[in-house]
Image (tube, rainbow, N blue to C red; front, side, top):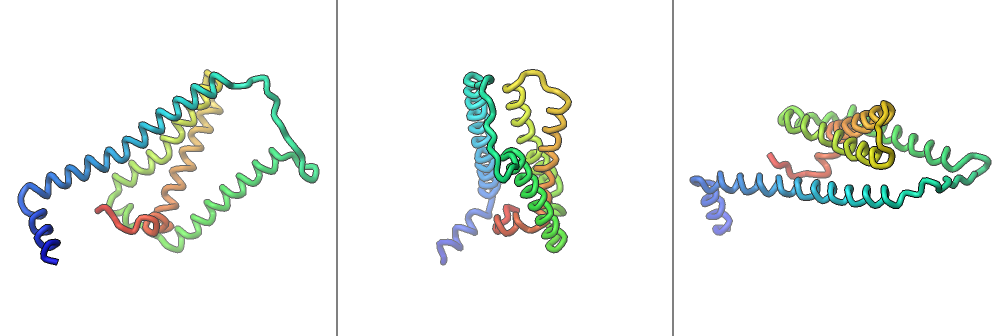
Length: 172
């Protein structure tokens, strides 16, 4: 017990605590930057690979279940799951209303929300560009809707209390 007490008193005095915070901040930034760089590198490798070995002449396969095409079934299921998830999260957000982090860290939450939305959209646009150079207005609209979906998801996850439950120890 005295060892932990002396450690606390030693770390809180002088310039040691400032350098500790700087080291923690640098470690946190590196922990964010390294996965992003790895993701960009892997995305570039996969994009190059799939662009190089893309089978343009391949025909799509579609089976039917009870006379309904599997593409229709899969698309419908994806829409139902997406809408159901958003409605469920919105319901929980109305009940829980966890606004504490948003109110205490508005800049961080705004940056987090923008990054959560636009980084996947940028990756999506890059994949679209590699598949067929020359982006159309429809591609930009799809990327914007993807960014909007992920930003909405981030806000709903925060307000519904999911982040507080998933990450119980706050950084602040």
